Image 1 (cartoon, helix red, strand yellow):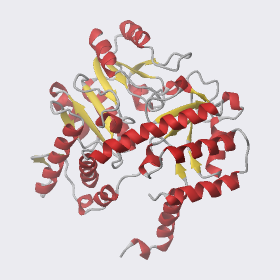
Image 2 (cartoon, rainbow, N blue to C red; image 1 turned 45 degrees about the horizontal axis):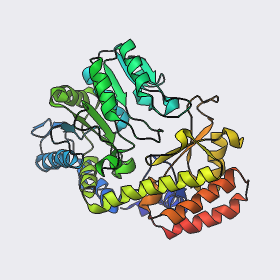
Image 3 (cartoon, helix red, strand yellow; image 1 turned 90 degrees about the vertical axis):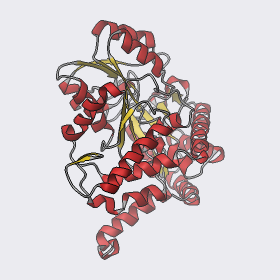
Image 4 (cartoon, one colour; image 1 turned 45 degrees about the vertical axis):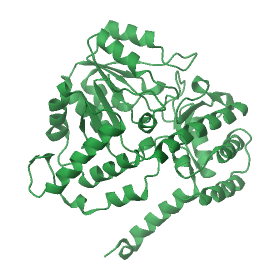
Length: 406
């Protein structure tokens, strides 16, 4: 039996394939994994239970999976130049990875410090609707509302005042470089554990074009998709003193058996990241993002922080008299996929905020470069500001998208 034996289900899959092929994806947290990564996800490894760790399993028959997991650990250490770190490759995704760190190193009610969601942080960094914000006391830092950038001296003052147990650096909607060393120094000054969540910028770090949290940060978490272009999953790096507690927190603390096919796909993605083409790709991601930012500024779009150092752009739409939700919907009608997002100091509610978030990883994976990026910026201006015919633009978007395969 194959998927074609289930026509209704198969039809949905083919419809989604067509949607992806014919649209331009500007969501910065999304990307297209290679054929090899997708093949790895579809292997017989999905049939095996492997609770525990290499050499210490609760099920028999793990001889070859043990080798795969050990290779994945080693490969992850190599690409991040983190050979002196312990690495756990089993976390199912980014939020479970972060929660495992908290569970390992904190007591409920302890204080954590992370970036405010509306200023670019992540739900799992202490937002009130997330487990992290309900189980722990939370201190949140943000960006300077004038510059749109992190004020490290303000972060230090908050840390000195509240003395958190863990200080989390990293973001999901911050378009500038993060100084992980400054965060680590602040953490050490107040006796806190320094933790970096590099999920968005992991690929840029591997390529050496964004400051790295290694070798000083105590704990580093990252997803394996986004700029890393692997499967949906996560990994945790930690200094040896935290290894035993973090491994126990992942299993049996919050997870059962690892998803073996995903671990295998992670290994494939780590090996792909060692190739020269990967660094070339990451450089093009940055080039495209800077081109997109520059073109949008020419069209009088207000960019939070004035531009970008990485793969993403955050636009403040207030001068365009359109909400983030409305802009998202209009762009999608024309075949351009971008997500609404809060901006620092946003006067609107999160479900319909004042901003929109754009990124270049996915279009760069498909082979688009400066010329195509300029064309995309012109379409965005036509849709949002000039109120041009979205049906006409959609035809042009579809033609360009189909030119570049998945």
